[in-house]
Image 1 (tube, one colour):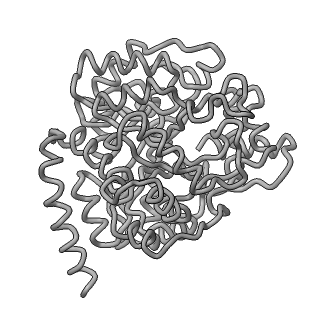
Image 2 (image 1 turned 45 degrees about the horizontal axis):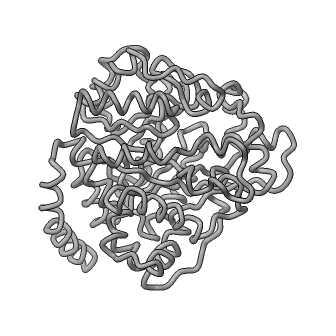
Length: 414
């Protein structure tokens, strides 16, 4: 999401070149076999578009999700709130998402448990997995966590970019202001664990994230935590055009390793401005596959997912960027990336089949890709949301896959 906001800022201050978004990104050619594989596999991405920041017209959602369903994307972790948002703003954003979905009630399924994702896949619906990129929606009241649970919020980030009551985000850390996990941050984590809401450490400063991981490991051993949309800093380090400090939104290898050791996962986002020193005008399937492959080689195939971090267009985020200018003080990093053409991201509907062909060429099996595209997330979801031990999920999931395909064949034969 951040990338699209800053591209709007860049436009205001004179960035050269066209400004794009996922709606304008390239559709990459792929084999029929790869397209069919994506159709047949549970695929869970991420849509970073709260109402009023990335979209205001319900038709935008309908077009986007229709394209995703047609290509075989099962569902999306959808952002209801980011940055410094109140509970009241969360409710407004939730309302507009749900009002848009109410116009096509047969095409969406709100996820409460993992079987809802499977049902959405069988029925050709869009699985809706609510995410919050901020803890400020609690309005300082921990009891609201129970309400968020009932609303279907499935994951939460402690600190987005700036310094908050919970700790510091990545941009504050980049500027030397990482205060670490606070007492309030620990209390928020306690309630997240109590209600089965997944701790997402994307956008979180390295010290704050590290202390959050320490707290989880010490207080809640066996409960996984994740990075839902984070690019590997190590992939671009020592590149010919790397910047001195690197992209502040990318995470270090040690953070990804700890998430995997907790039983969680890390998912790269195919967002061009984070590709430090590369900054393509359109991320290629090979470049996206490089991110996946880097994480797999580092943490193993059982702990990697995918996330495109989609926004729609930049036009609607200018006011948000103006109103939150202090939260996007990056010393010109983003502007330079946009000047070099990194103004889009790889929308899963347009690129995933081509990524599949690339990963097959590297020796990845169908089983590997099924884990990366959705299976690993499903395992962690089941553990955090429903208390299902990972070994039980691994034992039962093959049978669920078999039954799912039987039901899907029957459903589509009607």
